[in-house]
Length: 163
Image (cartoon, rainbow, N blue to C red; front, top):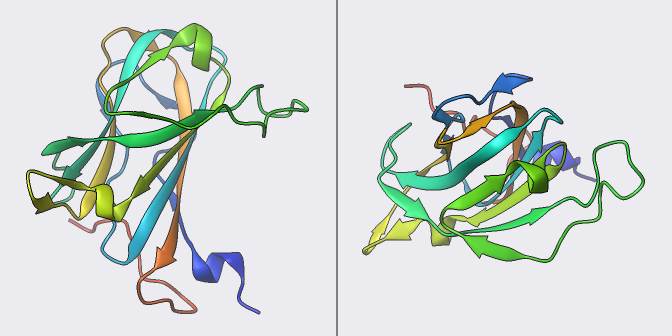
């Protein structure tokens, strides 16, 4: 039996309690070995203002060439609450306004397939999540679960760019 961690890439995208007070990029993910990314972002209870979240595709680490449309769902309650794992209906966006009243203290789940990481006929390999910093302060924690590896191995190579 293979372990979950042998079949999925588990990637921390920022330090615990990362401050989002201005434009902030999470670590880029090299999607070359995976077909799908599920990104979990937990917002602190102190989030205020309305930030805008983007998912970008790029040819290199940190390059934000094309805004991507992504699927998202938000948890119905704060972590450690009885319904924290109950997610809202699937929706899509290419520029998600994170209204503090709607996301404060909740988990946001983003879903991005590698085959959707294209624009104008160009397929992008690197995925970068960006908070534009328009009007928000608060802290987050974020992780990615990379699934459907193209070449599964007992120990998958890193998806964190080394450049």
